[in-house]
Image (cartoon, rainbow, N blue to C red; front, side, top):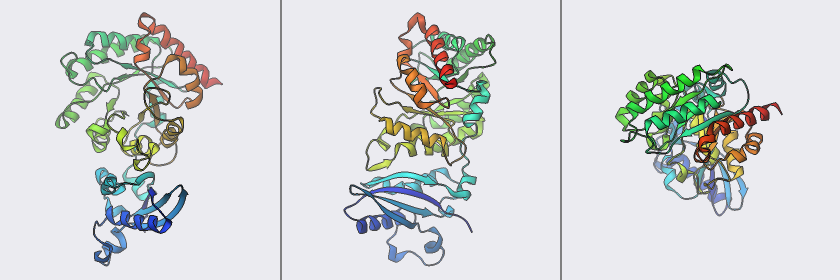
Length: 374
């Protein structure tokens, strides 16, 4: 017998009966999208129709509903999986997805990340301690300057060189010219490292949808070690396809996804969006806004994201990557809070170091190494 996958919804309602009624409506809306009394008997009613399996009081006018869906509602399509999880119900108030239990059948269909924590460690050659990830920015900087910045960071001990998500195909740094130049700079700097580690270069994969696959393969041929993808703009299925087609690890950027999580009564929980869904769509690293910076995520929400990246299905654990307002001064506390299985992003604050950038990166490398030994 094929096992169902289960979605947990946070429902706002005035009473338990009302919440139970809303759960029934969700099960209908997310599958057959017709009134209950006209659902066809047989296969449609017995298999396709979503099943409300539990509705529990969560307190404060909030209820948790667990609904089971048959794999036949999805097939092997990731867009359809997302459609069944929330779809039309995203257009209604007071419904928020908080958990996904794939079950064995859907886990086999959607295996998730191809590299994950262990794979990224294998590529960087760093067996323990957190990964340090300087960001190449800002938009408008010359290719030559970006290449020098990348090489400087690699020689100082960085693990991942990530392009800013705003570096697309602009006149100052066209993708076709930028990626080979930076990849070459990273490769030259890697050749000078003597500790058995190497930095990985993740260019930002922007541009029109029809050009994404070609651009990804061009980046790989030029020496890129991974891809930065923005699923909020390019689509979760596009990210999954790029990971599959290129065989490169993928870092997912959260741009354009904030509106899906900022309301407590709609969309997705923080862990679902930046942990579970990123894993489902094949990301190996998930970037999210760290608390205490210029974004409004709380420590609890960040902890939820980290937990979703690391534990349970879909697939293997991936690396959470806090960023946005990260500063060198905060690194010791952050290293203790997030631990070694983390990619630590540093952008604008790191650039403030100016000519001292290499020494700052080197000190941060020491902080992460020391934290892993405590």
